[in-house]
Length: 417
Image 1 (cartoon, rainbow, N blue to C red):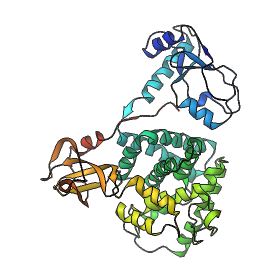
Image 2: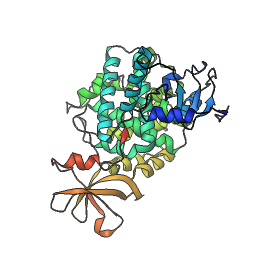
Image 3: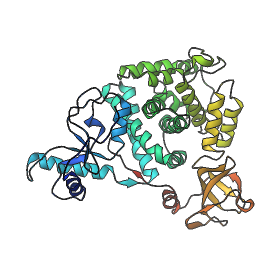
Image 4: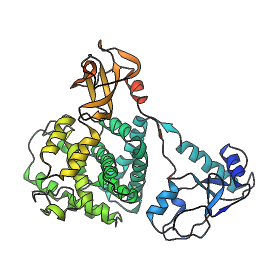
């Protein structure tokens, strides 16, 4: 059933406006995901921002597509006609304050930092023994990444690329999750399935994350025991996810098959070609790239353009050729967050793919003498005088972070989830 305007309730628009302006009428509030149980009658009628009745109390939301459509709109419910001073009224004020805080805008670096903390908690729970609350936290984080990345994926990718001092397993999983959202959107995967794919990206290595972090500290080649643990980790991870109550087939299949390769050289099952699900192929591309651009004890990190070149060269044999090409086109040879020295001698940050893979959008923050600019300045890298000369380490400077934070639009701190 399409969600349409059924009835207009007289005076509702004015009451909603009063609520939003902080006046005494607080009965109305934004609809949150937890207000909707798929397959169960709505506990409240749902109204548009203008006051029109969209869905009557008792209407049954049948699937995630309908739920996501509602939650992603500015729609409201009339929670209660509470009197000022009552416990319910005070509770409503507290909810309103929480919602106000959740909508506070933060820069992409603060957003990644706070949600990285949630991911670290999730991984610790998987280590101790996951349960339903662990799964709920993964779902929460996946939803937030999905919604934030729909509008801010370049900024999120840059903040992740520039993150320092993070656990390899955690920040890599965060990177993979955002890349899955970006590539999944590019190839037309629907919103509900993309959330499942993002959840798979967040958890694809939980069966060996502690080993990953150990390998960060050693330079010796893998032992046979470590190699066997790695080859088994998709199956180990799926078992942990099922223990946490995950039954989503997209999520489980993507994790189980993300190391399978088109030519049958992958693991753990040696699947080939069409035996490998599309979502697993997406996760494989994202995981391969995120791993290659990070340092590990037994191997050096690759420059993004080198990693993308390797992915391109393996297309059709190991990596899905169409996905590889779309992935490279989406990121460009200088993905967001890449520090670039221009022909002018200036140093800037790639903030988007630009008009071609070799000509990213670059905002300069250090002049040719290495001094910080007063503000970031966008350069046309298709021009010979401002073409990208090389990838360089980003110089240290007290003003650096403030300049970086202003390059991308701010993101709602939490959003109403």
